[in-house]
Length: 212
Ligand SMILES: [Zn+2]
Image 1 (cartoon, rainbow, N blue to C red):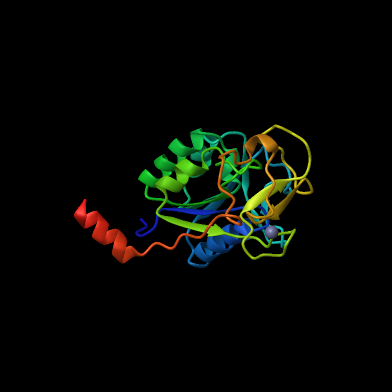
Image 2 (image 1 turned 135 degrees about the vertical axis):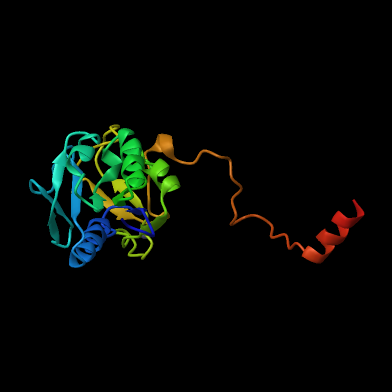
């Protein structure tokens, strides 16, 4: 039986190193002879069959499942369980993860936290709320080279939330990210470049609040 963290999330945009971090943590458990297993959803057809692959060439054996409930069928012997591309598993993954956590297994989920619109992706926000440990990884922005790319830019026209591919996407920082027009911020925000700078003296504000 394990003690300590039981649900870990490795999230971020594409090319941030999520799968290689997942493989690293699973290999680390294997070095201690803990029974491990990795699952990935069948909808993701980019990796070779029965494997999880990172973009830097690391691979590890994985079971490909059509739906989240199948994970329970194959995980009874495992103590540490990795779930790659967890954004694609659908809402059922939440109950599956909670069941595994109740069995005192350690679950490590890797996946995209935001979709191409910059919106939270599928079950990931719910899993983040349940997690004991969260690591958000950043990529390097393909447009400006900043170290803080957190968005996944889609370069082809499609309104489908799920469009599996690599060449259709690139990592972008928040300044370079251009969501489809219907998902851009529409608040009427003041233009900070032309706004008069108002210096607030906290001492005066406190005095006025005391008088009120
Ligand atoms: Zn950028």
